[in-house]
Length: 127
Image (cartoon, rainbow, N blue to C red; front, side, top):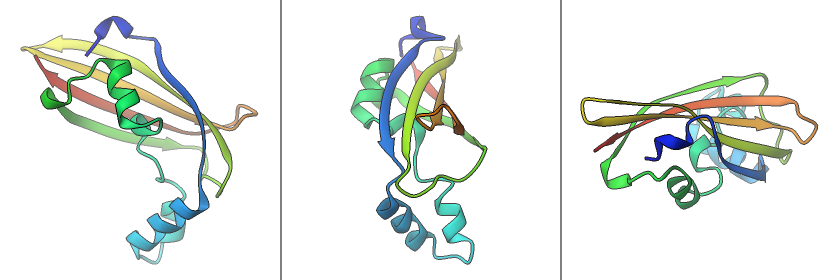
């Protein structure tokens, strides 16, 4: 992974919280709270622009990578079909014991700048 990108924006994209994807998530969950939960977690932040785009932007070698952690902070649920601006940034980077640790921060905001959700994802790459 490219630690020189610490603090830099890796990707920016625009997408929608597609109603059909939210409905699919709701059906998969199949719980009494599924309709609310599905509107909170329709995305895995690092791959919102596509896995290949994220891997290339970070310089991540997937064959040596592990998911170290994932956290979600949200202001409100996504509204079905709302337009979203998404930014991925390498928020932190460190090395220890032959491993690289990179923390990706993914921000989801409306075109008017209202923050909806921030996901923080840590990847570990064995060197």
